[in-house]
Amino acid sequence: MWPRRRPGEHMRLRWISNVEVWALSVGLTQALFPPLLGVSVSLVAADRGFGLFNAIQSPAILGWIVTALALDVAKYAEHRAFHRVGLLWRIHRMHHTDVEFDVTLGLRFHPIEAVLSTGFTLAVIGVLGLPAPAVATWHVVALVNGAFAHGNVRMPRTIDRILRVVTVTPDMHRIHHSAVPVESGRNLGSVFPWWDHLFRTYVAEPAAGLDAMRIGVEEFAARKHLTLPWMLAHPFLRVPASDQRLSPTPKNAAHVNG
Image 1 (cartoon, rainbow, N blue to C red):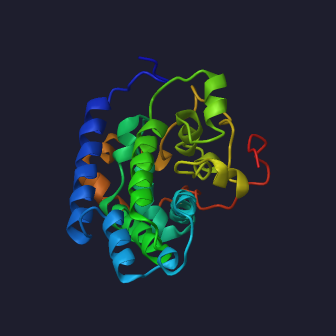
Image 2: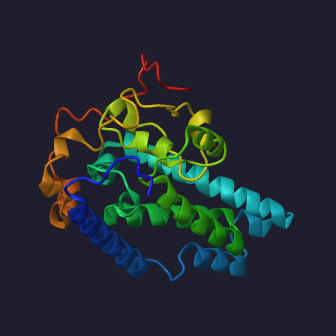
């Protein structure tokens, strides 16, 4: 109803491929990990007295607060690692090769990344012994916010600025999918935007503006990279010399808000 941009010519292909790769990722993680994922790990940890919160006495509200903050900062650290470590970037890069930005982009993760990400999250839950109700709530919030943050929606600037105080908005996350390497390594937050401010990876606006900025990875902009076979093969493709997205934080990025 209020799109930031009109859908491009490859919308149908993109939607089908993004849903297909999401289905494969879900199937693989469900096959490799226990049902209910984080909730199952939390319940097992509680039953066996394993993990920090199962070894100490603490108010229930503290468990909820720590769960939300710990899982979200863990996702931030994971996301940053996927952008900074060469091998992980090759896996995660497929998420960035989409040429448009809409809710289906939030489904576009390589199955290998889905397995690594799920395993890391389950490890955090188990080590900390996070309470199952809080873990379930955080997963729901993260799922809903992931769809929201990838939405192709034009939001009034005032509302966007207010929401950015507490959560990642579509305009904030869109910058992360910029074709400009300086910008695509920023705004790494999952649900909360605070980690980007704290660790100086926040960008307020893209240099070209939200309407004119290019989406994707220039070296993989061909139509074939929107098809499922090429998406699955992506981590094994040659890394172009022009792909400079592993560079450190730029010194001369005037539009970066630290």
